[in-house]
Image (cartoon, rainbow, N blue to C red):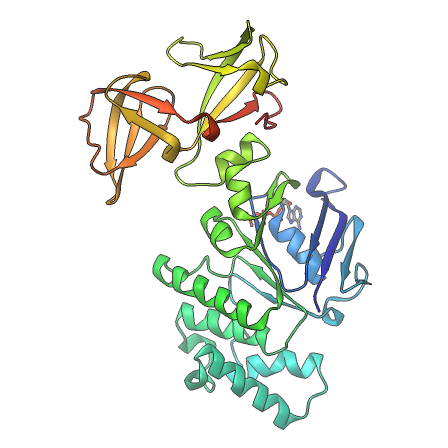
Length: 361
Ligand code: ATP
């Protein structure tokens, strides 16, 4: 079993001048794979370190399997952490590195420990490395050993702190799949911190998005992608990012008209569908690049500034707003400086309060 609960977890540094984690609450189900993502400094590592017992919270509680572990020493928590820099003992062999945690946390006999290490090494494909020292291994092999060392302990919860950041792009993709496969097989609750939104989206059963220590949204990747709670989440999740245009709303005769400062962007909606929008409201209009449709005529006219082919699709940079991108089929090939007309399906648009960022759709 490995349910995890964070209850109003808070961490301050420097006598409260830095709030690294700002009253975060979260329930993680047994066997769930949770990814925690956000920009640098948003409190991801501090949250994970508190879970591991490496940092003590300023306030709030941590529960693992119904046991309040907030004040329990790291070594007595049934969690195993995998670090970005592998944190292997340089003078011990792979076998000794893997067996060390077992010796500290279980009362298995030496033979039983050796057998568990051998089985895990086989599972990880590192049985040939058991007598090597860490400095004889590649980055990918070291991370495999670090994973093996966590797995061999059979903990209730795995904690991953950006474990793939030091690997090259290709290896990162391979290891990503491998970790998912292992987690599927072992069904061990996992909390995985990354700054890479794509990693978070592809790996997590649910994704947790933090900003400035505050929880922004928790949900299944697809739900978060389709229904971001605020403009920050909308912009953070998805690549290329959601396009935003700052607009003012005019509500008149049952219609909401959204218009940007230049008057080039005008979009109308049925007021009955948007009861929260008031006349004069400042809004941020959001649309994902793949939801921008391009035609020759019959929409909002805009000029193509740059065309970026990515193989199956083309990215068109349009002069409607800064970094406004349409992701279109590769057979749509306008020339630079051509004028095209863009349209949107109303079901795909996102509206956010310009001030608070909160979603209105
Ligand atoms: P990164 O992706 O850059 O690792 P992060 O999201 O993991 O960032 P944390 O490392 O948790 O963020 O840091 C959150 C905030 O707390 C930052 O402002 C950081 O400077 C601060 N912080 C973290 N540890 C300490 C510490 N020991 N003393 C003072 N401030 C700290």
